[in-house]
Image 1: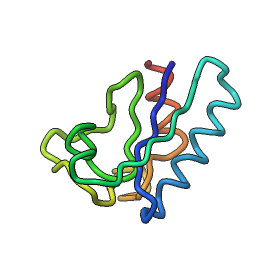
Image 2: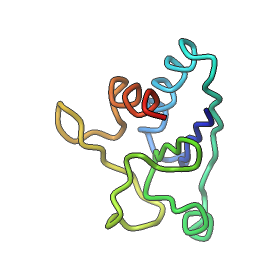
Image 3: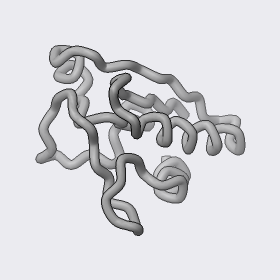
Length: 99
């Protein structure tokens, strides 16, 4: 399974998402993580980047809100504890278990 972490450097939340993904990948040898910096509006448009961090599973953003704008912004995820800058470890596990 291919997982791509899309982010931009000024976003503090991508590091938390990356740590969650690394923890899951350590348990699941079938997961390959790629990190991709999105640093221009054109790249955001090309990748369908809905904010940092965005996580693609086999090319699909399982957390995507189709009404969210594409662009260089921080992303907000709805978690059991309220809005956060990254999905929880449990939310990521659920998505990857479905993949």
